[in-house]
Amino acid sequence: MESTSEEHKQAGAGAEDPYVSKHDRLQTLVDESVKQEWEAEQNRLKLQLIEDDKFDWVLDLENQDNTTLKRVAAIDISYSKTNEQNAVAALIVFEYPSMKVLYEDFEKETTEYPYIPGFLAFKEVPVYSFLFKRLREDKPELWPEVLLVDGNGILHTRGFGAASHIGVVMDIPSVGVGKNVFAVDGITQFGVKELCEKTLLKGGDIQPLVGTSGKTWGIAYRSTDESKNPIIISQGHRVSIETAVKLTKACIRKFRIPEPIRQADQKSRTLVREIYDDPKPASKKPGKK
DNA sequence: GCGACAG
DNA sequence: ATCTTGTCGC
Image 1 (cartoon, protein in one colour):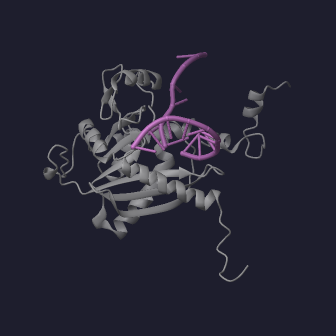
Image 2 (tube, rainbow, N blue to C red):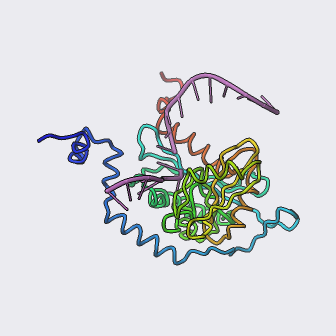
Image 3 (cartoon, rainbow, N blue to C red):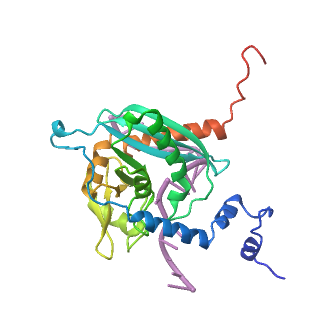
């Protein structure tokens, strides 16, 4: 039988087929039935989603004296370049507004699932839940008042991205900050890019992301004068879009990415390299060679 | 069927 | 997500 490379690829999805990449094998691990279960869980959890401000702290950028916000956290996860399943996740709690690190914790992880657009939470939330559990047990007094997540909140196919997912599961106010646009409701990367080139002229400028339906899914924000590409802010859980933008703005320091997320990204990336990609000669005993 | 596709 | 070289600017 004649077989194109495409057919060969599909026909040989078995785990023993050397012509099928590990990535492809992971993808086939998540079949339609799994995705349907995940969709159902997203829709179920979404019933608990709160898109209004529901917290007891105050963040006033005009009158800092009114501000009572003390603890902002960020989570991120970095993957091994040699094995895409291996990763290190980070949970860091910062003092606001000094951005001094109050608490940081890391955890190695071997992700069970691959990345599938629309289902990022199912790949990353398990290790985050673990880290939050350890925080609650070890330093409950440092529980953050709000959480920044690298990824989208309601800017999502079903209005329930990873930032909203972790926010609901942990019952913590959360904000999604992405580096790319997730296409939904007529919003496209290209469209947003073109629009932002006209509207985001300087650092601090914002551009609402309004879908065909009229819904505002998030806001593109030019965080600094130097960064031409905006970051994409969307509501996670228990925050309005205004608060989501205000908090993100308050967490920008010198760089495009909000400082908490930037540091969580940096540290998890350093660790994943040390642990998986730059294996140091396993601790040789001093004096021995 | 076709295009889209966070990390 | 990760891989990549040089390059511009403070």
